[in-house]
Image (cartoon, rainbow, N blue to C red):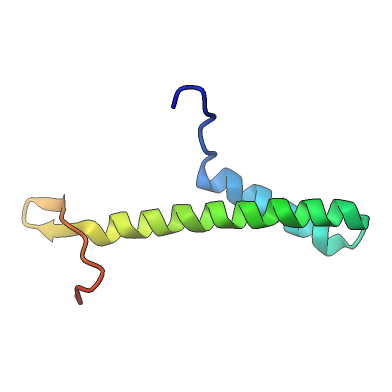
Length: 80
C-alpha cells in the first residue's frame, strides 16, 4: 500500500540486528533497555529470516535451460 513504509533491505536489517546484539552483549543496558533491545532483535531476526526464506524459494524455482535460467513452479516435495 502507498501509505505503508517499505521494508528495509536485508543488509540494513542485518546490520541493525548486529548492532542490537552488540548492545546486549555489552551488558551495559538496564533491564528495560535490554528488554526493548531484545524485542527489537527478535523482530529484526524474523525479518531477516523471512527475507532469506523468500530468496531461497526464488532460487529453488529457477530451472537452468539451454537458453538460460527460467522460473518454474516450485514443488517443495520435489527432489533434485
